[in-house]
Image 1 (cartoon, rainbow, N blue to C red):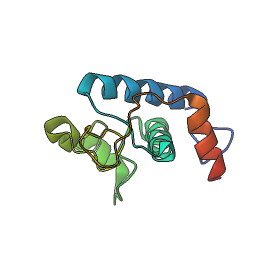
Image 2 (tube, helix red, strand yellow):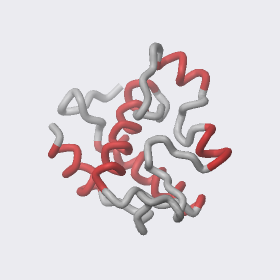
Image 3 (cartoon, one colour):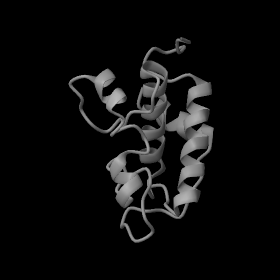
Length: 121
């Protein structure tokens, strides 16, 4: 397992993989990122960290007693069951066009993700 330069951050390769996944999934499902790009960036960073640490992109916006057990159960692995079944994304990563918080973008640059991440460090 590759360790990040800063222990609390995902590696660039995992971050880019989650960025690509999020963009592709948004386009495929006709959903949009939050109007506030920092929300999108933080969620993608959280998914990347979980992918790196746990081997799966476990939803980063929930509390888990046992993350490994949750990964195995797969319910909250992104895209989670509520998203796949009803287009309900608790993290506000994938929003339907009628959602008040939906922006008009289905793309976010790695630089935007890193800038948001670094501003919170």
